[in-house]
Length: 487
View (cartoon, helix red, strand yellow):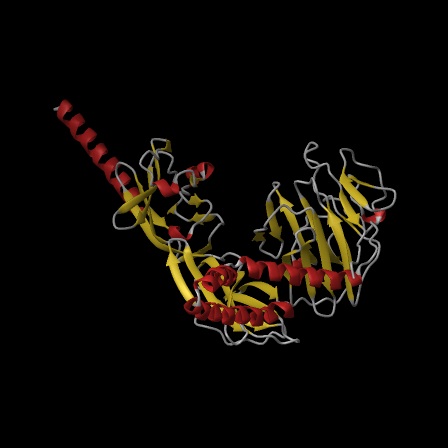
């Protein structure tokens, strides 16, 4: 009888413990976002998921899934470790849990380098031997597309030039506008829109005609609070070229007539006709004319050349300036210099002695042999002591080089630049009243980038950063070059 009583007590104890565990499990619940998440391509995103009341998930299984045509494994944590052998290929090396937070019931997932194709519905599923729960929410991914590129396509019979503006990788799709130098919107063809897995690609064409006051055109892409813009300046000589093209076309017709009259004339005129067809079809002609246009513009800008001398009182203590104030490089040793208010102390930067608060000015800097550099202009009242972020909102209008061949315009966010060849000498032109800062590759006579529509209210100073020495790899100096006006 005693044995029977003991068995009943043991059974009762088991039932009480089991019921307690069941009640505890029943109270646990998985929580996540109350609404969908909106993220930006290229950034990192945290997908929230946690248990309430706070309970360790170290001993549990955490499974992140994406709802596609079938469940796609995004991340799996099981038996105290990540088990991602069956993880979808597109998520490889891009996911991680916050391991130190698992003890607190936090099973949130970090998704790195976000892509437009990551958009969709995600499920966080957590389970142990006696309990499971999940939460599902939607992630929307927006993307700021590439900097627009303008191409000169062809002439028309009226002397107009067809321009095509193209940009890729937007989400949602942007509005594409063509504007003149006054900022007025110009009539253009309908926008062509194509979507792929990484966003919308857009194109829009316009035909422009010669106007001595409006030969500067802008292609502007707008997306909610974001804008990207490119300008093109067309010299009047380019517009005049169409008459030459039409004249050759007439000559081609005469050649055709001459072919009927005599085989000898056909032989001579056929060569001319082929030459005409080559000229009409070869887009290099347009690039050649555009290069001449920029060369003319550079010649005009050089009339505003100024003699820039570096200001040693602003130079970061790691920088070494030449005695004439025309060269700067990053050294290996910190110099014991007075910490004046105008001195840069965190980044290897320096500005020119002369400031400008009106008019136009131009200067050239040799960057040959460098793997990294920054150039441009800055306003007088900028941060010179702490962390510096190069962008117009902070008073910096600059372009630069990174990793030997990655050119960027620091427009906030940075704009990748595709240049025809490695830049050895940069021309910087500023029109204070027009709010224009333009950069040119002097040797190839090509345009690099322009900040347009800016508003200047303070003094502007030429800005230079040779960047870190990088163990001697970037030891070449920035050299302020004398400007020779060819006119």
